[in-house]
Image (cartoon, rainbow, N blue to C red):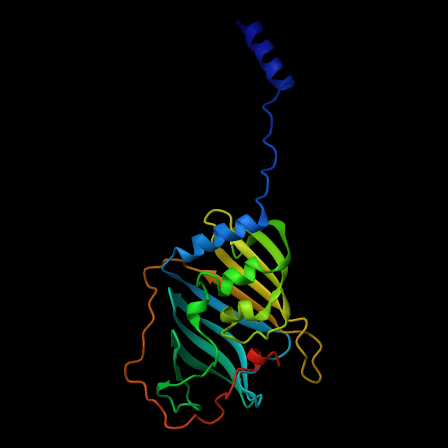
Length: 259
């Protein structure tokens, strides 16, 4: 019996169980289609939008610089964020709510701390973020030279990393409409398990830089807490509709003209 056991052990050592080979990576275009379907089939998510590199201004007078936004998006077309801005050199926060084409803003200087209902970000429509045929779908399906870099850990999630060259207008909704309409470098990370988009990075290499700046604007967008029970957008019921545009509020979105 001992001899039989020894022989079995020797045979096992000589013929180990084969190690599974690497799983074939999916086709990038097919992955994008699946990712859009999975991302769109949710109630919403939380998001963080950050801008690095050269400054990007919300107004044409270059007085309101966008720095960061953090909030939540509820399908199909509502977003609520705290926006970090630099106004005339002073860093502060504004509260922004957008529901379809309606926008509401509260800021100590721009609105005197009360809610105003007016278009703070002309051209921005949160409904285009995940709309069929628009926003993120166009950004990922129309990119040139789309390739799958591989599988990486991103924001604590195992994700497929896609890369390509797209048009700024197609990803504008994920930067509150502030990316210019030039070709941009787009990187996207898609959760391997859920197929939802979890991270975007956009580099505006073709945007003219302000004097003294050497690095292009770089946008990072983190999407997380999909279907969280606490997701909700509160529309300000007491918002005031100003008779005139508040001081220093943009008259046009500079990104919309590619300037």
